[in-house]
Image 1 (cartoon, rainbow, N blue to C red):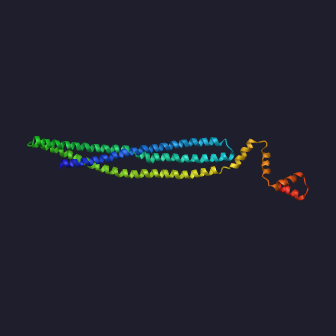
Image 2 (cartoon, one colour; image 1 turned 180 degrees about the vertical axis):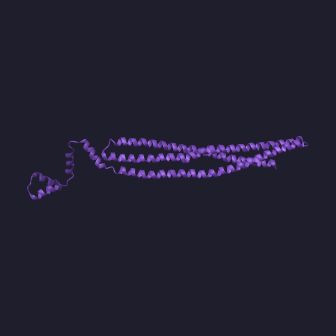
Image 3 (cartoon, rainbow, N blue to C red; image 1 turned 90 degrees about the horizontal axis):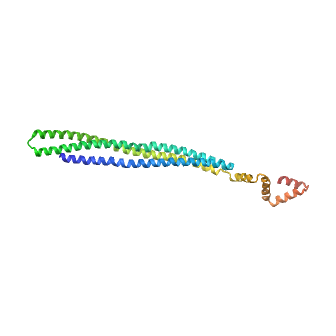
Length: 270
């Protein structure tokens, strides 16, 4: 009976050991991958900061509307990197650190397992010794009684450590499930907060780009190419855009006709 009880408890201990090993393996992998995710997010933030700087440098060389639009875009994009920095810090604190803490937790559970296995081995050793004593000295009641006492002590110790292990592993499983729910919920919440803010910022950045007045900046650029005769070039463009009637009126005005209606028309034309 005792031998069968030992075998049952050994099977139970192996199951508990497998549960701890499973958490150690997968929580370790999750921790490494989440940490890499955070590092890549931080590197993306750094690259975005470089992009903001380059946009500002380029904007300073451009025409007024394009310059202002790019600077506004850079300001919005820089604001997004502040949100990304907050995302990195929250992921580190709410996701990576709790997973990392399981390294210490698993070590403590392994110590409990080790203590239980040590007690079990001592009990199995005492049982084997009692069986040998009974076989070799069946009539020596003193030696047999002493072996039985040692076995009883070992059994009590093994039972105590097994009960403690069962309780601590049960709490471990309960805490593991709770922590998994918390960690993944935090991850999702942090990501949703960031992407919600990102949508707001990207919308504002898009609007700033769309507000750039192409025609005004093109006029400024043309004026920079022809600073001396730019007004006369504008007159040519305006003249070419007049209707035949307007051109006829202009010609009569230039010819100096003194008719009142033509004078009035000339004034309206001008």
